[in-house]
Length: 390
Image (tube, rainbow, N blue to C red; front, side):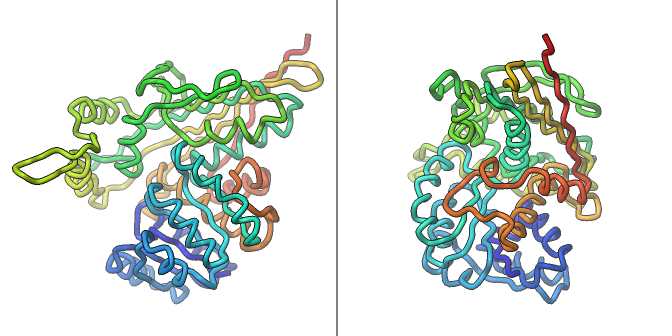
């Protein structure tokens, strides 16, 4: 199989690339990036003859389509802002597509291409990282074992003990972190989506060690956009997403947000139109470099699904604890985000997912084979069931 990996020189793309190269079924990987030097240097450092580098500007839809044509699957690891352009390139090239998520609003836009992908006879799977991605399939596993689904609540915890000289570090894209803190979170309540203020819905949650007790807040996420559609026939009434990042990190980001440094509105600065957000990201990105530090963090993915089976109330708690992949210099957050796209892309290329159109992981990714593939990579899944007997 031949895989196109766009954004392959980025933090998450590098993890996906490592995992692809660990599979003997993967015969070729096209590593596309807007920074050709970064992609080339990465390939040279790995020294694998299956790799090829390409300069790709995903804003050029036709040019991107020409580059990826002939591949079996296109993995989009670029910033989610470009998801629609990359999907259209995938359509033009007739190549299966997957990405890391669209942060609610983008995901809803992407679903509008469902008929186009069906007509082209190809599949697009939206949100194939850790969350969205692993969390979606966790929800699917529990929902399949219930006759009715009343609610799905996602709760993510993280802690980072990495000793680094970096003045600022982030578990994933700085732009995405800022969006999660600035953009209003949405929940599904009753029969409608409800918009809430940023940092609302604070809840003290006891996560397993080494994370422990932490405060999680509602955060904008694509699972809340897709679960009410995917589990509609089972009567879902609530879907929520809460995120608990390390408290020191949240305080720092919240301060930057409160100072309007994450604002995307242009300001006149000495006669030049400047977006504070652009300046902030450009300053923080080099500061966040790991400088070769050994990652020492931990993620907890928890999905709680409540419903009924045989008329009795049943509550599933799906949980996974993830640690770094030290030999890849991959943090827990990068590892659990970068590995699933490789697994799902290989499933798509082998024909293990026969559906066509635009779907979300909970609609098409087979849960047990996916969990087994994760377990082979040291990411294990627990399911705790509580059932009311009388």
